[in-house]
Length: 158
Image 1 (spheres, rainbow, N blue to C red):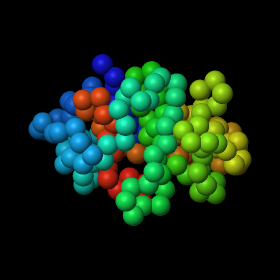
Image 2: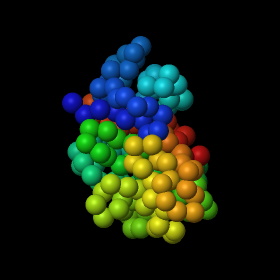
Image 3: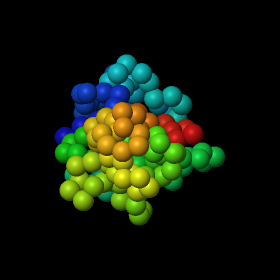
Image 4: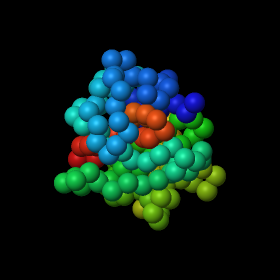
């Protein structure tokens, strides 16, 4: 069963739809948030659906527009069963990272690469390994995977 990675906020993973204290929630664009993250935090407010897991195959990435009224979009990268979601903004200058729509990863799919400066980030935690923002990190977004759909807070990316 695919695991629910939570960007840099967790080392472990929780099976989809198994957040403690969560009642059954419909798989829709917005559902009440009741999922405690692995790091003990909660996804605030309501959730919005980003994509189905099958739309994000292993070794790929996908971009998403900002939330209604928001400024920065999001992107997801998948490594095996882990899904990591970050705000689409380089910590160096705040520019979007993607080279083209849905193109955030290096040619071999092992790193996130900023299209502007070529900075390279580790997928698992968003830390910059090389480039002008070395040592900084991408802004992680808590996720919840339920019934094969990746959800984030409806305000993620503000």
